[in-house]
Length: 318
Picture (cartoon, rainbow, N blue to C red):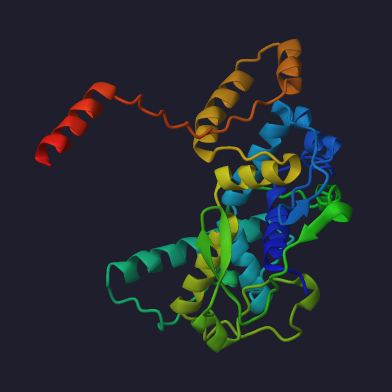
């Protein structure tokens, strides 16, 4: 059975390549042998000189796509557990269903927070797929919707450290629960009660897909809120994802606060390269990882004058 951290990064890789073009995602990173599964501790680190601006921009693009995948993580879990009737190969149907289900549960969450009529045990109605198909059929042909790259080869993103990696020992079980921490998830003692009661699994393993999917009619707000929480944990944060990948591949701990300041400057320099030669030079330039070094405490020089006064004062008191 796979460990929890590896599962998280596998799902991130699966969705993080969504906007890539061509069969090889993040080609500059693949070229230098970078591994996108930060759950595997890489023994043989890469030379920091291989971390160019081009590689760093690809890491940022990957992290940004993952953090914007909340509704896709949610739909993935819904489709794994329930018979939705959604054609997942149809990009427009896939996108519209994910967007509507995601928006609806976010509204419900706000209503529950505001203590309105919505409750966790109330029924949650998923989008009507037949109605959605009719809407899509009547839409303007030129309407924009995101298209996924279905030809991408994700295996090239995890081959760099498999032979020299040590996965963590924590394993997944259906009784395991996770909660969000900055940049990911961690194991928690209790499980997701609403999902458990309905028999819903938050872990999507395509090879273990149930033959008989659940009826979506008993679905409640509580189940959807737990799936939403899990989805947000899978997304993580952009800074933390980049930090973990740099640490795993190059053995260097970047400072997330400094990175937040560096990234806009990096993008600004990229956009300022109008000529091909300038762009190529910028891409090949080694990216400088900045870290916060702890400042040594300065010892105060002893004030011998005051010390003499203190000794003299004590002698007088005696």
